[in-house]
Image 1 (cartoon, rainbow, N blue to C red):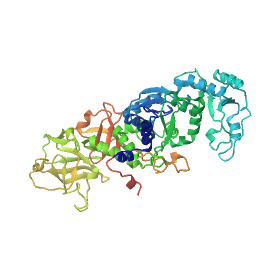
Image 2 (cartoon, rainbow, N blue to C red):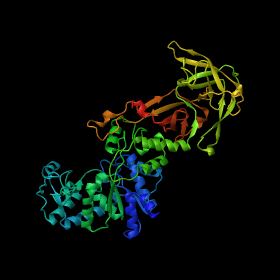
Image 3 (tube, rainbow, N blue to C red):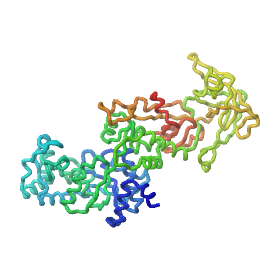
Image 4 (tube, helix red, strand yellow):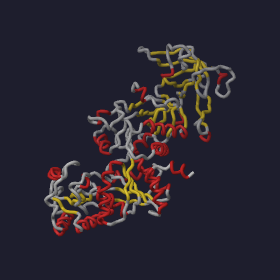
Length: 557
């Protein structure tokens, strides 16, 4: 039994379990440490679930810490969006911290390294440094300023802090090993000069710690027991450990796991920012964006993201996950919880000629066949209804190949009656404008005494009670599967058909009271969410996802 349990644990969970059993840690402390320089994306969702999920599983704690050490790229807007995203995913943090909270302590750590002869102020420009740093196979040369005395370094560093020097004029470097095969260990930058106002500290500081200096020490200050990073930070781990060892502070431990890469998807804040600033999308929360704000607006659910992350799992090596796995998780969750309604995207009027003009009938419709507790709703039925144009053919093939409506063909209107097409009108271009049919009064759903059997069942909307809406049909933002292997500009791979706006759709009357954030399934069409652009006069629905994956068919695969 114990072996079965252990096999179900991923390698990080096994490590934590061993650390707790051995007494290395009495409790675990994790953290989710985003830089507030953009909106979180689906890749961050994996890290959020991992860090907060481990804290929950092992009765530990998880902090939310903002690594805000690059003031020119960071903003309160991003801070607020990150906090909102974490809460939407279903988590809350034990402590809210900022690397900027630790600026005084980090400065003191830097002074300590200078005093110990482990750091120095360097005057070389970036270009000059690049000439001497070497390559992974060629040792670098020492900076001519590496031999400065402790006293001179302390004075220069204090002057840097006091604003005496301009951006790029000086940096503080760790004094490690210019021949190390790991380029991050070749006297890395610990502090740089940035005369930029910070979103929290204002102009109190004009020097800011590098990520590598701030991150590990922030972990240590918070007594983070397990610092979890994606694999690209594996080469940073020796520096992470070196600084902690030199400062003799709490030994936080860094462990790396595979980042989440999705097919047909960009998960880079820099590139996503490029899409936003270039107006390729409507903003960070554009429903085509893989940001958490975007997928929330599109209609994805927190539960579907959780199930997706769980299915992907935690691995030691990077790979690409098929975006269809995410889409399946969304469909699976929405199928369980969304009510079914009728939405006709391409409507054509159908007149039931033997139905009295002034007669209306109340029919009962099932909200969700997957959930009995969802109950039923009333639908009004009358002489004139809308059906989808795709459900009618003027000259259909044999009944064995066409189960929908055509001249002399019978179908059932769901929850209503069986009707038989008696004719149609068309305009000068041959487009059908009106369909005519007769209904059989003995075929009312639930009360059918006719004995008739028809294979086709159509959705419909009462003309009198129809709700007009704008329907935004979203699809994948990119048309190329593996965006990591492209050699040209990633924007060349944008899908030109990622958004289609439909303004002619009609919806059933029950949706007149729909609210922003409501999700529904338009029967036989897909899942939709009421968008924030909706007003009292016009509802806007975003297509979350189709009922089935038709991407490969669209691409001719």
